[in-house]
Each structure stands twice: as structure tokens, then as C-alpha cells.
Length: 141
Image 1 (cartoon, one colour):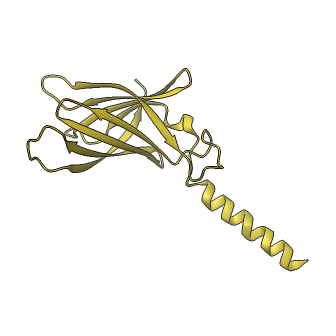
Image 2: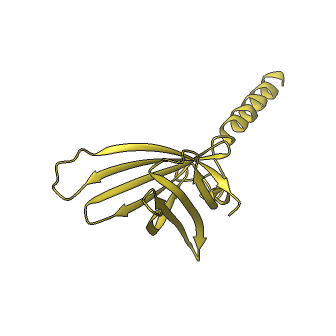
Image 3: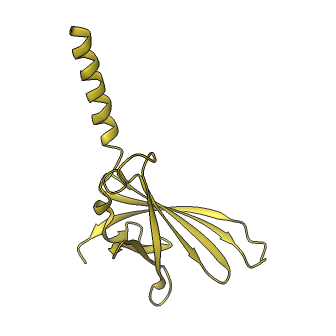
């Protein structure tokens, strides 16, 4: 009986530790602003529109930020059998332009939104593909 209780306690502990790795999809929703004012991406808005998840991004431009537009995004859970709404581990969004493709991998880290951007140039310019990471705080407006 003692071994059974210890096994149950161990399973509960594993569940509690792993539960902290996943986020409710709604925790991603909102307006997020880059903590680095000189960062490449300045703002990310994440929302649900009907049955679709949408990501809207703005990049650093002068004199005002460039609107990358809205794209459909896709949430990912840690396995095929887990609840997508309650166990979201990451979100991806893809932005295509005339000269590049940027893949965004979006994750929550505590109260911050972490966005890693993988950019590949498609215009034959010979520029190197690159990646950049950004951190965002949730904004009230």
C-alpha cells in the first residue's frame, strides 16, 4: 500500500511539474509590446477570429511602424492527444513578402511573450537567412 501511495504521489508531482510548461491558449491573446524599443518587431496582437487564431505584427520603421498585416496562426500542443486550447506550447505564424518569408515561433515564458523570427530571403539577393529573438510585455492598449 505504501508503494502505491508513493507511486501516486510521484505521478502527481510529474503532472504538476509538466502542467507548468503548457499555457491556456487565451493567455496568448492580447496586445504585446517589445521590451526593446529598438527591436525589429515592435508589437504583436494575438486574437481569435471566429474559429481561427490570428496574429497581427508591426515592425520598426521610420517615421512610424510598418504594418506586417494579419495572418492565420497555428497553436501546437505537446502531443496529438492533448487539449489544444488548454495545453498550448507554441504558436506559429508565417509572413510572406515579395522578398522574404518570416516564420514566427511564439511562446509564453512566465508573463512574457517570446517570439523567435526565422527570416529567409526569396529574392535571389544572396542575403543570408537569419534568426532574431524578441521579448514582449502584455499591454493594456
